[in-house]
Image (cartoon, rainbow, N blue to C red; front, side, top):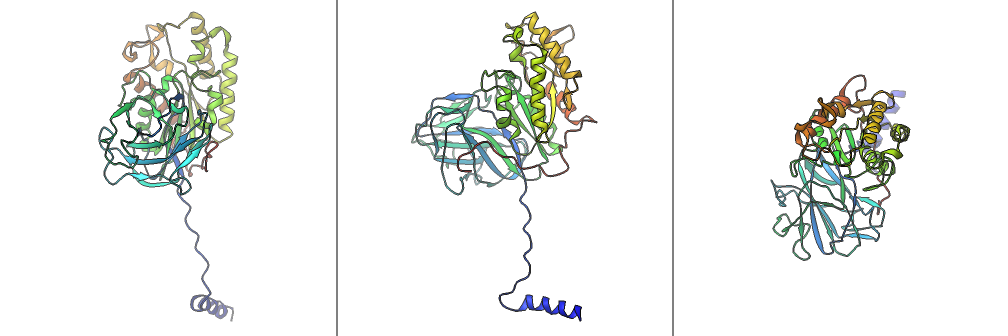
Length: 417
């Protein structure tokens, strides 16, 4: 009898008008993962009426993208009149035909970003492969005051003069001027099967100074290629001139940690390579305890988010004009803390990888672009190898970063989000 009633109930749900079977839950959307990043480092004059075609190099790919844009360092509201994304066609400003998409902001074609704020576009359906160049074009119709930008892009991007071109132009014919800065754009997230991302957090050594422009040979780029098999994105949060303990070029590492690292999408590991600018500035003012306290603060804040932290030893700078014996002593003591202090989840000994065996105060001549501080392409590769080993070495296996899907990240204070 009970079975008969159950069968009858199913028939009634199927046949009688107005009655429906229980709804089947929709599958959860795939998580977002950071594929490319740059950190705001300063401001430049606004470009009213112009379109900036930023060229950015992705690490991991996906089936959709969303773009992070910033007025974080601006002093007036920023009106974004149009934002488009497209795959880049070879070199130059041309888009691959059929790939250009217009981004929206809560369905609207434009948005106004308050000073001090960031924003994120709606998802844009566009299949992007790993290692692709993406064109992110930003049209600013008004004079919005100081433009938030990243100075040391080491990448040629393009400008269309006022009235000369539109963000939605597939052809780059109107983009006749070039720039070595990234304007407004600070990140690209992808939706797909990526396992999470690693943030490279540091100064000019991470930003890429010394590497060959337009070749993507910074050490985070090299690391991204090594981690492709792990489906792991790599985000470059380096700022040339940045400091660990104090503001310098951009806010200090502690001040910008959330916006430039912890709040990014799908972050599972943080690689900290920062402190040499503090040392070569005023070394007498900083002892090992000051650095140790700063590193421990970074670690605690990252661990609170479930993010593992790799510490990178500070590399030599003997021969650089600001080198001093006192600064070298601080560097050695800070490195001893990074190596043996037990604070970090893993250690990448970049100092050991790049120093000259005949004079450990200096980097190897084969890695020196000539200023005795930064790295050429070969030096960048050596740092990337060292960080890669630290990320994947047991027992501190950091990548694959998680067997589970990455947690969604909450973007910084946003406009229209």
